[in-house]
Image 1 (cartoon, helix red, strand yellow):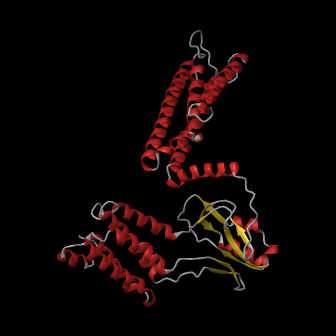
Image 2 (cartoon, rainbow, N blue to C red; image 1 turned 90 degrees about the horizontal axis):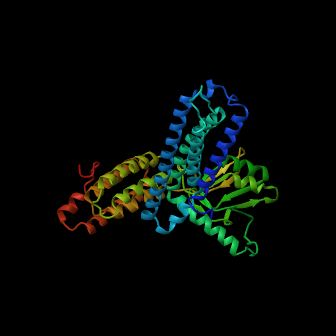
Image 3 (cartoon, one colour; image 1 turned 180 degrees about the vertical axis):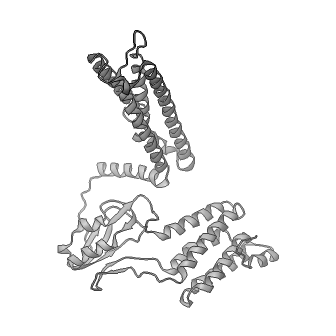
Length: 404
C-alpha cells in the first residue's frame, strides 16, 4: 500500500488536519489571546493570508505532480518504459506533494475559525503555524527541484534500479562464499562506485606511518564493484588502518570534474559524437565547437610534464602508486571517436587537421608520433568516406573554421 503515489500525501493531509485541530483547540483554551494580534494580524488580514496560502499550496502541488509526470515521460522515452514504476515510488516527490497538500488542509480548516463579526477572533497559533508551514514549503520546493534535477541523470536512474537489484540479491542469495585469497595484502572496496576523488596527501601520510607502500588498483574515474580490490599493500600491513585508507577514496555514482580532467574531454567528445550520431552532416558546427575546446586543452597540455603516479613522503620514499593517463591516451581520447564519426564531413576533417597541425608545432618531438598517426588516419578515413576527388582534396586542407 505504501508503494503508491497517494499514500504519503494522504498521511500528510491527515497530519495537516490534526495540526489544524490541535492548534485551534489550544487557541480556544487561551480564548484566542495566546498569540497577539500584532503577530497574527486582524481577522481581515488573517482571511486574506490563509486564502492566499491555500491557493498557493494547490498550485505547488499541481506543479510537483506535473514535473513528476514530465520526468516519467522523459524516462520512458530516453531510457526504458519499465522504469516508470520506480520513479512513481520516489519518496521525495511524494513527500513534497504531501507537504503542500498538508499545508493546504491546515490553511483551509483554519480559515473557518476566523470570525469577523463582533470585534472578530483570530486563531493566532494556527495562523503562525501556517506561516511556518509556508516557509517549510518554500524550502521543500527548492529542495525538490534540486532533487528531481539530480534524479534525471542517467547515473541516478541506473543506480535506482541497480541498488534494488543488489538488495534482492543479498536477500535471496546469502553470501556464504569463502574469503578470497590474494597474492599480496589487499584492501577491497566496501561498496561499488566510480572513483571520483583521491586524497593523495592523506594516503601518503597513512602509508608513511605504517611503513608500507599503497598501490591504487583502479584509475581515477574508473568504476569499482563492491568487494573488488581497491588497494594492494607492500611492506608491513599489520599497522595499517584500512578504514582510514578507504576513507581517502570517494566512490560516487558518476565521474566528476573535481580531479578527473579526462572526464571533461570525454564530455566534449560526447557532445561532438551526439551532433554527428545520425549523419556527419547533421550538426557539424557543434562538433567543430567541441574540437575547438579539445584543441585548446591539448595545446595547453602538450608541453607540460605529466605526473608518474608515484607519490613520495618528505624523505622521498614512494608511498602511493596510482595509474595515470599518458599524452598518447589523451590524444586518442580527444580525436579517435570524432574522427571515425565525422570522417565523411569535410568540415570535421578540415577542423581536425588544423588542430593536429597546430599541435605538432607546440608538442615536443617525443610527443609528435600520436599526432602524426591521427593525421594519417584522418587522411585515409576521409578518402574512404568521401567519393568525389575534388571533395577529398578539399577535406585534406586544414581550416580552423572547418568550412568557414
